Image 1 (cartoon, rainbow, N blue to C red):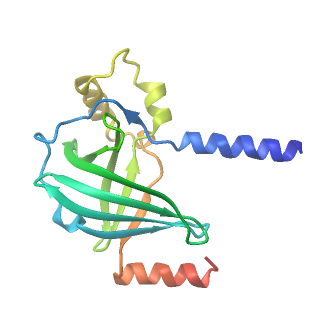
Image 2: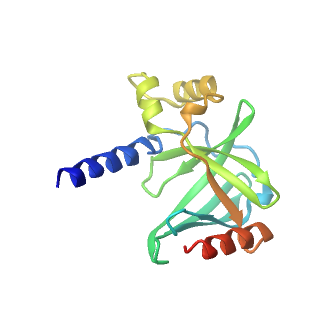
Length: 185
């Protein structure tokens, strides 16, 4: 029984360590956003080691705003989470960072993305634990949040793990899908 208790504590701790930072302010407005990368407009899939997957459907909402539909499936192909977001980007240093506006108005997540191949992207969310330990402002404003993120944009500890996504039905997607199937997932 004690062993189960300690395993549960470790798993809960790991879950909280990997939590994305959530803010009541954005790091830029829709109007200040940069034009979106048209190559992102499509359907994307990320496969998880335990057999689950995440799917993103990305469409253009406005010139600089994307509509993202997110579905998360469990090991048995059961839909567990369905969300939609408005996403818009800004340049911070050498990266494009996304403001990810959640359904709950006034809530934002932040992530950077990059291309790892013609049909492969990664997304890394800004980590809540890093922000809580290092961003010490009493009142969070767009100005001081953006300044902090700009100062730390190259600090790898500010980001969670990379999540790899493959363009649905691309050759890369098919290779990973076959590998997952052969591996028993």
